[in-house]
Image 1 (cartoon, rainbow, N blue to C red):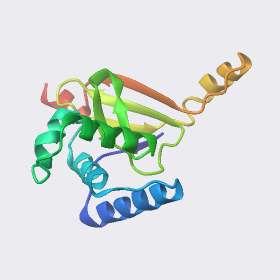
Image 2 (image 1 turned 180 degrees about the vertical axis):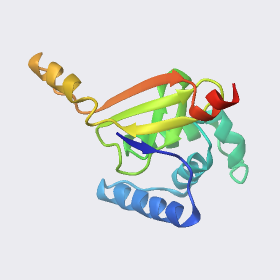
Image 3 (image 1 turned 30 degrees about the vertical axis):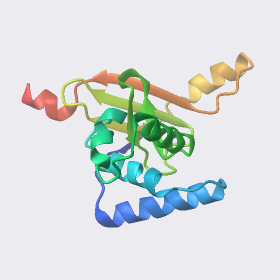
Length: 155
């Protein structure tokens, strides 16, 4: 399993945004300034962010309303640039291209941090079991909640 932490340096950030633009272009889509800004905000977050947490951060775009940000977030999820964590109704930036098939999120109940795992190898049995039942899994996302190592040490 590969752990992906969401801390982004300036060089890494530029590379991710460039790759995001290429990914959108390859799909015949456009990473508009608003979509790019929302992705940038997600990359800044320590953990998963709700749409309403991001809305005030779009201060430079006073016209941004909840439906606008939800459309941008839905687009980013569809492009594989972000994940929606259902249990939190929140979003987190994806390490581009790292989790096209299977992802497990470990979500800390105390500090809210989310660690992302590329879970391809861990879910082989699930895919095999599903295929025996005639079901072809294209994508899997599992959410697990608990305490991260930092919060366990602080307890």
